[in-house]
Image (tube, rainbow, N blue to C red; front, side, top):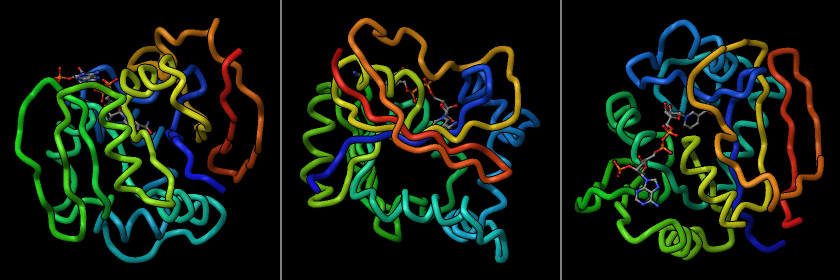
Length: 206
Ligand SMILES: NC(=O)c1ccc[n+]([C@@H]2O[C@H](COP(=O)([O-])OP(=O)(O)OC[C@H]3O[C@@H](n4cnc5c(N)ncnc54)[C@H](OP(=O)(O)O)[C@@H]3O)[C@@H](O)[C@H]2O)c1
């Protein structure tokens, strides 16, 4: 199979992927959204959070998402939040392309993650990520604004949402300003695990 461009995020029942301010990350609502991930062995080991953790279907899905990803693309707000919170050895272990207006030299981290700062748009970032990923997939890691840019440009082929049993009421919406007239989505898979429901869709032009 040829490599795909995909995203995979946790979303609240009412469509939010984060609180409005990155200062609220790690707060109560964030943990209600992402708690399922923090309980998984793969996630805990990859983020150096400690030993132990669940080894059921959520863990397997996380490990598979990591395995298939040869490079990631992310927006600057996600990067800024992560720069404050990731361990010295960030959890990507591949090249990561940050779409941003800010010029910055590549940031090489231990463990195989290098952040490249791309100032000439989402298509350029994706082309570089495809080259870096080889025969593996490219993950549009987030956040919402960057995912929607890629969706609206017709560049996302598949996505998975871990639908978490929490209501946010406000925050960063996943599909804010999505071009609904352009995109058609078709269900591929639904996997309820008891923690969240993993919903996978294929994306095509209408
Ligand atoms: N729930 C989940 O699974 C999940 C997953 C990932 C992220 N998140 C959350 O999502 C939040 C961030 O999302 P967000 O929507 O606020 O922001 P974002 O998509 O991470 O970043 C947006 C920023 O990226 C830069 N950018 C995007 N497109 C660009 C372009 N074409 N050219 C130049 N620069 C461009 C701009 O920053 P500059 O102008 O400053 O360069 C823009 O303000 C964080 O809180 C993060 O934790 C949640």
